[in-house]
Amino acid sequence: MTLILLYLVVLILIGIVLFGVASLVFGRGEQLPPLPRATTATVLPASGVTGADVEAVKFTQVLRGYKTSEVDWVLDRLGAELDQLRGELSAVRAAAGLDEPVHTHHAAPGADEEQP
Image (cartoon, rainbow, N blue to C red):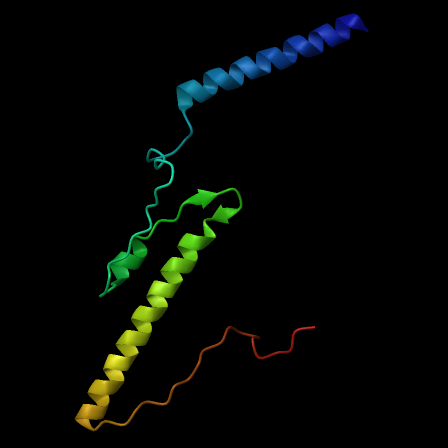
């Protein structure tokens, strides 16, 4: 019984050493170095957000996905930008005497069905 425990301990120690060596040799597998603590790569311009700005947004990854505060901030900024642009568009349409288009909301398939 002692011999089996000794083999098990040696096997675990060899596994730990191999894991440590592989981690040092191969690193964490990231393409970019990690961000410094308490910083974020989440950046958007103050106004005039473009498609390229949205594509360039990066979120800090945490244990269960992305940092919620960063995602909420980006969504709030984009929502405000859309509201501002729609307001400007409706003001231009009103000044030009054009009719406002009918607003239709596109819902996901099955969104109008009742949920149990």
